[in-house]
Length: 246
Image (cartoon, rainbow, N blue to C red):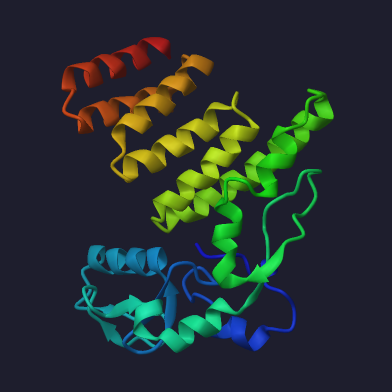
């Protein structure tokens, strides 16, 4: 899933059309350029190839023009395959999809090439303004949670694109805003395990279980991380503990 087209500044319809993924119908994220010169999100095209393989087709075809594509070398990173096209995409004017300190739209505007850095920057406004609020009033809690949910949604997008470092950064900012919500910890745990960072996944699952001891996802994700580390006895014990908690 790419970036929602609603966050592209107006007056750029022609450019947007050239960089809209035909699979998810969104502005491309982590773009690939096919040998037939069409642009798709990396994860969308990978999923398309996987689905084609499951359906036992003779060859995967481009979703736009139906030209046969080799899953191994039918597409390449747009940045390398066409530096000029990448620079044009990078100049597309964007709005930030996240919420600002008062629970209102962020207000940031910049180029496509700057958007991810803006959203994932540790010191950017999304966490700084809200996390520093001293009054723990219902209104402040609601604003923090709304901003955290927006960060989680952005993290989910990066997770779907297999861009795990960015997903982890966004989930971390959500956790900073709402540290007592297990869901944000478990989302980051999923990104950690996908990135092969099993110790970090275990820590997040343990923190989630401290908040909600009966959370099945936390038990299962913790067991999986332990298994990936080769600690099968503890993994089995964790699964049994999760069954008892349920």
